[in-house]
Length: 397
Image (tube, rainbow, N blue to C red; front, side):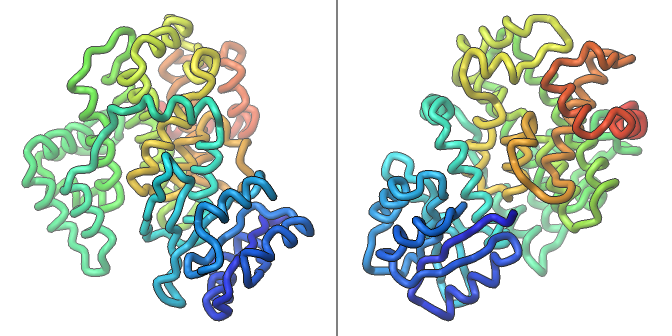
């Protein structure tokens, strides 16, 4: 069954174009005035209701409050139409009364999906309660924005991307360290940023820069029972395997790179929890103990009532990363919670994560010892498929 969207706009041409934009992902209805919304909601269930920001008859806050009362299951989204062809999500879930202004390059239907994912995360009471405690977070440096701008530009140049990276000795060293890591599976060693950029391409280099920025935060802290280095190696391996799995399942442009980025960043929430809630997270890790088949995710839910997956996705959302990446980070332990068509980067990351974990826990990987959480992933894709991926993609990670 298709998801349903209701567009609230008295700009007929604009709402018609918007309807065309999202029609592949949603069954769309339209009303002209915000006052008609409640009556329409009584007739049909909607997954998302989009209000044109140009409407003067209702404020953003009033619209969101109306939606919460009339249809709490629907996602309220307020969109900007800078002109009749340019639609962007403007207001996200109100956070401390502040509306976020976001201008993404992704398709508008993906922006809506992204918004819905963020709403689901913030509507979880336990996750929302922990979010204000995550105050120590990575910050985006100017070089990241320069690289993103260059990669996304029609006239972008990988040579200029390499120059940006080379201008920062620390970033250059970290990128080369990752590129030359055995976990990334490259067949040769690189000695300068130009070689690495030209070989990997702009999208993977963007991902590695985000990865560097995220992990740079841990340099200021000392950890007990938690190893950033082990997480770093695991994340590189999952990124590489997820990309290769995605390449076997999809020829869609960008899917493999999204899987790679999602794999690199899927466990960033662990780092953020270990830094911001060290005592509580130590309880989580002590509960897991030295059991190689133990599930940190399950212990997080037990002690924190939320997990690194949700926390990581919420923090990374502020970087405006594309929806498929946020989805892969937020749901890599529970991909079945989302209804989706086809094989997605989330599927690749969830499978890669389990395969790399299991390979690290035991060379033989006895299936009977796998935890119930990871066993669900094996059962979902089937033992034969998982073993094929493990033998061809994981063994040399």
